[in-house]
Length: 262
Image (tube, rainbow, N blue to C red; front, side, top):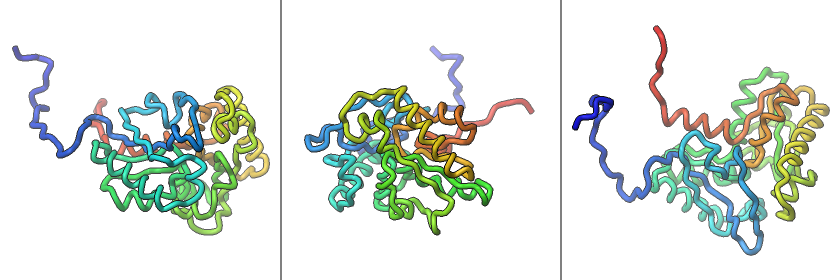
């Protein structure tokens, strides 16, 4: 029986894609190894976290990079770069149309991965810094909130395409914030969501006090998007993060027809 609701003009042949096991999940996300015996990390991914699938407007697929923990990510190692490339290639083979990661410091693998795949690669919100610099008035700076300020090196900024003296960048880290550090840096305590929210807001307010020229905020850490709304309520300035970046990419690869009145 014909379905009168079925638009016959939209029917077409669907051909299988060689070696693609999954369909309909256009975003591939590279994960740190949470099961490592040397650096265990077993914290919940709440809505807004890159690691929570409900954060995204489309289905996503995750792939762990074996052995790559947060502490090992901070120390360059060619073996883990190769492992990250292999995981990225697998995600693309499984159907990913865009790639991202679960830690902004994975920017160190940006060039290697985009050389190995044929889809857009957005491994860190740090990639937004050049755009924000061009978007803001010349007398305004970008404030970066990061998990560990000492780990956000000039090398990583250059890997994100940031050139020059970085004089329009101000950085604040959460390494000394007790609730954040316990949950995400030392794995020594449960995730106190309200506590981390307050610490994030306090860190931003302190940064703005020291740098009143900041015109936009950028959260490097993949666990900070859940607190972006609270930060914006407290400061009134734009806040960008992993979700801003990835949803921008999704909008480019999944365009929808416009509807409206004309």
